[in-house]
Length: 134
Image 1 (spheres, rainbow, N blue to C red):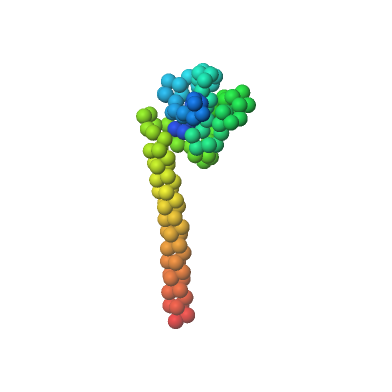
Image 2: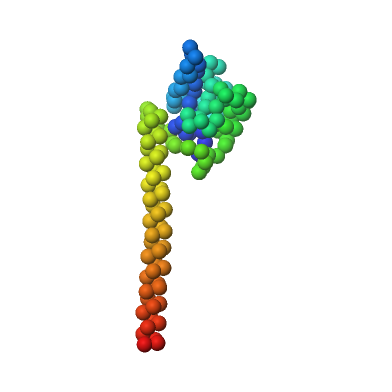
């Protein structure tokens, strides 16, 4: 299932000196929150790096971490991108954009192929009509 725990953009954040510092979760942290979402240290809040949700902004989300992180299906929703160990957020964002672009191009090809089929059928029908009514 595509959920936040498996998404590259799941982050832990902390505030220090008026600045917010965000970090990707380590693999062992992702494994732990599969069964204990409160295992992430108290000085961190969890959030979506893409801004879909942030328990630092809405602390009530912390009470529903399991729902947000493990149970909510993100299939074809939000900005889900599979977690890639060691990859920075900027690289994941760029790869996600490329993946979406390729998907759009392939969808465009489908419409082009359908148009070619329709045009071919119309040409054949026109030819048959001319031969029959000659």
